[in-house]
Structure formats: structure tokens, C-alpha cells
Image (cartoon, rainbow, N blue to C red):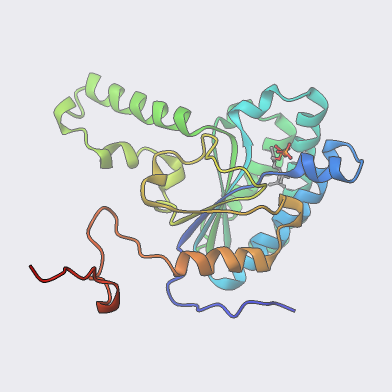
Length: 255
Ligand code: FPP
């Protein structure tokens, strides 16, 4: 039974998740690290479903970083297999529930057997608009910024834009991760408090929630708790906040 009664107003529109802790989850059970990824894959299913049910407009999952290619071949191979299995198993659910599947990152590095299931599902689901599920695969935030800068450089070189016309927004518009808008809330599981090259540009005003739960243990209730924490925060986007309540205004002693 769920412990949370969520206020459905003021939900974050775009949630990003750094799914960390699979390896430790397995090691704590005396299992090999890949077993943690297998359990983590079941969590992906649960969290996608819970997000869709809540009415979250966009969910971006950091499934594989550009830096993850340097993990042992066996682990990389298993992650690719799990990704393919996930896409095959969830195809019906994705299409039946109006979910648009997107992928961001250096997709050219993915094995052909992953592209063979990923690409058709991306195009089959491209007209769906209930929720956008974006898988960050072979993704790096710095690499995405560099790619947007390269695109702008080409446009300037070809005379389609002037260098002095480049703004923060022109870079933003060239980042596939931000087609669904900046992330409002970014959750990292696994107890570490860092960003690890995820959605760097879009993170400017995101609210961050760090959970000690290892990803395979992260439940719908933990997602609701993160959203509750988000809803309790005042987002100021660099502006001043609402005036302090009278009881909190510092009392200036009479001179
Ligand atoms: C980090 O845990 C997690 C990953 C590198 C991969 C995430 C992959 C999945 C959740 C499963 C497959 C994905 C999909 C979309 C089906 P870690 O191995 O770094 O954990 P550790 O910090 O405990 O070592």
C-alpha cells in the first residue's frame, strides 16, 4: 500500500533520474554486479509505469553514460542485452499508453542488435504525446554541449547565423535532451551526491533530490517522496522569493 498521498497540482513536468547503485545492490547480496543491473531493469519498468500514471510529461533516465563503455566487456554486454530485452518487453506498454520513446547520446556507438529494436520503437511511438520517455544512452552532458557548439559553429561558418547572435537559448535549442524542456527535478539514487555528466546544460535551475536507496530498491513510493520534496520547495530561478512570514522577519532592535 502506498504511504504517500500526492498533491497532483505542481507536479514536475520533466524528471531526470541518475539510476545508481546496481553494482552495490548485487555485491551486498554476494551476487555478481550484473545481477544488480537485472534487478535495476525491473525498477525501470516500475518507475516508468508510476510516472505515466501520475501524469509526468517527460522522464529522462540515465541508462548508460559515454564513460560507461570503459566498464568490463561482460558488464557492457549485459547492459546492452538488458536494454534490448526492456525495449522488446515494454513495446506494447509504451505504445498502448501513449508514451513517446526517445534516445539521446552517441547512438552510433550502440550495437546493431540494440539499434534494431530501439529505432523502430522510436519512430512507431513518435506521434504519442502522453509522456516522453527519454533513454540517455552513451550520453554525456559535456559531449552534448560540445555537439551543440559544433552545430552553431557550422551555421556561422555557412553564414546562416552571426557569431554575435548566439545566445544561451540558441545553444539550448540544439540539445536533444531539452526538446522536452529543462528538467524540473533530478533524482540520484545510490547515496552519492554528484551529477556525473548528466543533463549539464538543462540542470541550471533543476531541483535535486539525492536518495540513499540503491536503484534496484527504489520504489514508486520513493519517487512520490522525491516529488513531495520538490513540491515543498520555492523555485526562484534567480529572482527574489516571497517575503518572509512576519514571525521570521529578523527583529531590528529600536535605535
Ligand atoms: C549505475 O549503477 C547504473 C548503470 C551504469 C546502468 C543503469 C542500467 C539499468 C538500470 C538497467 C538497464 C537499463 C534499462 C533502461 C532497461 P552502478 O553499476 O554504477 O552501481 P554502483 O555504483 O553500485 O557500482
